[in-house]
Image 1: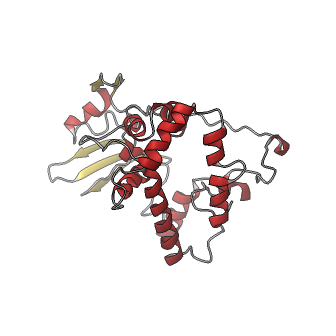
Image 2: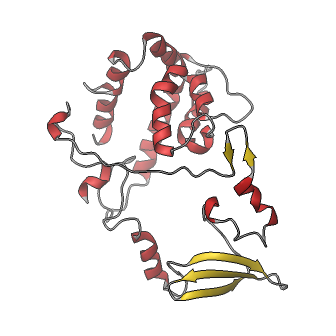
Image 3: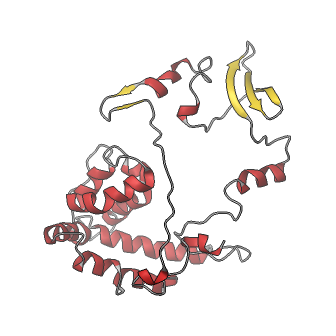
Length: 270
């Protein structure tokens, strides 16, 4: 739901999180008690080293919450392994709640629930102080959205605004070299054939699996990104997991919540 009322329903409603956690079958009673202690009483202090998602969740909410709630969620959303993903890198907003919790003077044990409440109050104030522009379409914070004509809308619009002399689309970098004057020469495969551009600076956001052989002459040490054996996680180089998106539709009457809207997030209005 929208606004404070919707948030209260999410937590305390007849199908809310509180009822789901306390009366559902997802967690055992020992698991609920362990999670409750970390959320409302306190937990072990963070270690000096960076934690993985699993380490962070187990330290605060217990192993059962990780195995039954967080592991399926993270594995699906990130297509990654929560036992190797960095908590602060993958879920920085949630990780920050622990810092906020310890910042509450009387909350010596760092109980997570109170930090979450404080952050929610901060967010409400921030959104009131900086509301969305009136010409924006209506949306709910936290819900995903997209463009009516797909994500390609963004680069095509940028090209339209800046001009096709500055923004080149469908140009694939195939080689990058540096001449004796320190100027980069970038060779591209384009719809009009091979094209070479000269530049003082090059910034790349291409994924690691697309770079072997391209940067060899300018970054001789870059090969470790592609072929270094990382035995601790049984991977070679930087791993980019394959992802498949599957869309499933159910009749509306299959859900208990008869007010459930059609569609998903902001996509329902497209």
